[in-house]
Length: 129
Image (spheres, rainbow, N blue to C red):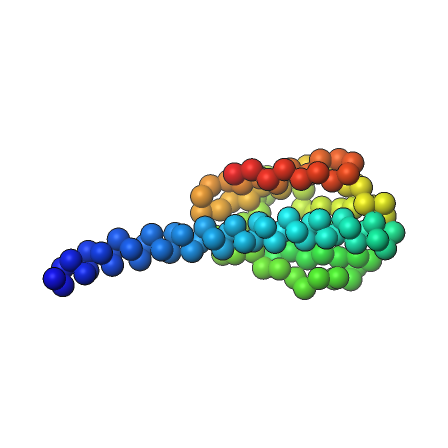
């Protein structure tokens, strides 16, 4: 009986941890998308540029306007890292809500690489991975 219980727990605990990691990463990417759309709407509303800036060395990102954070900084989960090969380190919106630089943010996650593609113009985002 004890061996059966140990076998079940040896199988259940690692699968639960993997599921918890996946959920944490999914919540992070959902929050990131919402924050980027918030930055865009805030730039349009205030008629001033807004940026979502990644602080790689600190493992976080923040939404800033005129060098001032307008949302609390958000930490990246331990299993998510912005790759050095990303051609964007920030998502910037002009005063009219348009993206100022298109590109791709690449992330290393527990499930492999995920990408967030930012299109020029109205700021359409495509998440894949």
